[in-house]
Length: 370
Image (cartoon, rainbow, N blue to C red; front, top):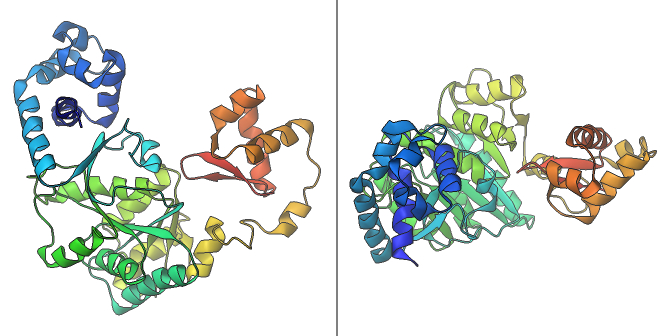
């Protein structure tokens, strides 16, 4: 590990008023992470969105000095930093524009599972919610779904999801709303230790950052971005789980929710998500595996639907053959490969989706079902 280079990777995220999107623009303009801190202020101020004030913040030595102290903490505490340009950075998260530039991982830093599911909900989980959470994860494990379960280590549904994953020999990741210097809530320290043996604790915050309320809202985008889909087990009319659902939708992730009785306070959020078509209703793991196309002996779309649309024109066949022969292709890659305008490719892909022959997967990549 190049400690000097790591210092700059951490430091750019500490510059006031510069978030992930603007930081990426800076790196692109300057050619490297080190170049951001070595570029002359006059040149930096000409970058769109920077100006003289932000250029002045970049020149402040306090940012780099604080980052250097964090490098020492990382080395002493067996923490793996993953920068967004590193090969080990989670691939799903890379597709999110506002993903953190760097995450700090404690535990198993691999993200190799083909199925990643976020399970979140209220901190005031009822017996019904806990039962639904346990049953969903247990059934997925019993039916040979090697799922990585992502949640936030909070009270209620979050900790229930982590425990269920561990008890069923599934890997799990806890995304923290604070630095690695503490565990919140403290009563979950034992579970956090177990998670590091079959998964990891992940944070975008420096080790001394405390569990402040805004941090938990920020970390929700990581929970959504790491996952293929998000399941809301229980939620009141307001809460972090609903924020996670909105973020997942903005990242083109599938969102599912367990329904509850209309009189149940902690099902109000789930019922509203379903009512407003922002989440698909699920009752059990069968619904989830079917809608995600996880069941190997059952197609993601009914065969009968495909048989209604057997006639394809030349361009449709060409694009379908391209998607079938290449895994995880984006619309711009398909356009380039087929030498067609993106607007035309988009229209054809939509037509093929209606015919049940392709599906837009998380990360805005396309998969064929033929």
